[in-house]
Length: 148
View 1 (tube, rainbow, N blue to C red):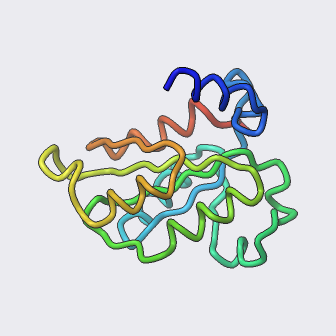
View 2 (view 1 turned 120 degrees about the vertical axis):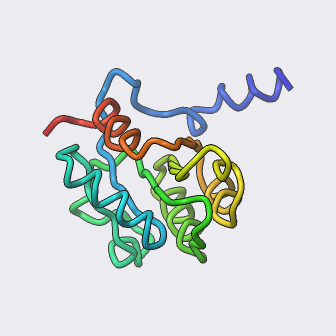
């Protein structure tokens, strides 16, 4: 396993091209009704993110307004169905070379890792974060994103 990891790390295509010390240009997409609300609340809190729409990614290319994009965050609830939206975003992001982070926000500890949406988000993201704190998303975005 260590050898495979080393081989993957040796290939520049498998590395994040910008170090963590450089703020990210982030697009956000809410999955389902509750995910959309969580994403809208994050945008309303003032963090520097760009709302992402399915229309913006319809042509499998990077839209001009997202020319500096280097991170996509999808957010949703564990019990809310997302259909093929998460897969569509992940496919698009892969084509333009951008990593996808999924944030699953549960209402309580008991439903954190269950629900139709958890598996879908896990398989359509490069990184998944699970939380019960609705304030986690805007805080995370503030720390990793640009400030203006």
